[in-house]
Image (cartoon, rainbow, N blue to C red):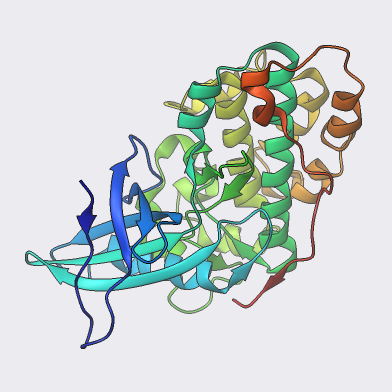
Length: 308
């Protein structure tokens, strides 16, 4: 049975969805559920976060994430649909409604791809993530701040989308920026040295992509190893990284912020750019039950705009 969302805000309309299954994993402090429209039954996703104190740091960061997502427009970023903040059982609850997606870890487990098909699908997914991160760092001059496999969700057509924008901050770090006040949300194994030491001047003076380049390296390790990162020492494991991506992987994880590879350089690299034509030339047939798993977009990047 669906649990109905019926809370009102200031006498306004209720969020018009029914909440369904809760997924096992979600980014940050959110929970992730499937949901359907009460009007036409169309599928969406709902992310939920709650706190007793309406000024709780995680709730303040979540509001920032909702605001940022609402203003971002990019084909590789999760699509915003609606949001609602209500009081439920003595707690402040924030709901975020998006396009229908599932956690990447869940999808990869269900697909159970292997060999070349797995490598092609993962490489294409990473291409889309580098597109999204490059857009945030280079076009918007902002920092995501907590990139990892949990920040990736997957549509029904198996396209990867980036989300988890609670810490999204301007690279200039002016004003009351979320990355500073909620950096505790980033697990230690995902933090570059400057973030772990809260060296905000180093973050500000380094390239706009430095923090997120490290995060992309962490994401790449988790995606290709198939395991969540539990310690920073795991980043030294290179046997799971495709040889053609190894040099980029190591540059993403440089100890010197100024030497970390710009995500735009990764997405323009030969390994990722050649994925589609190489796959189309393969002689290995795709199993019928895995056909969607190797569906690749014909264009690497569509026009994108940001209003952040």
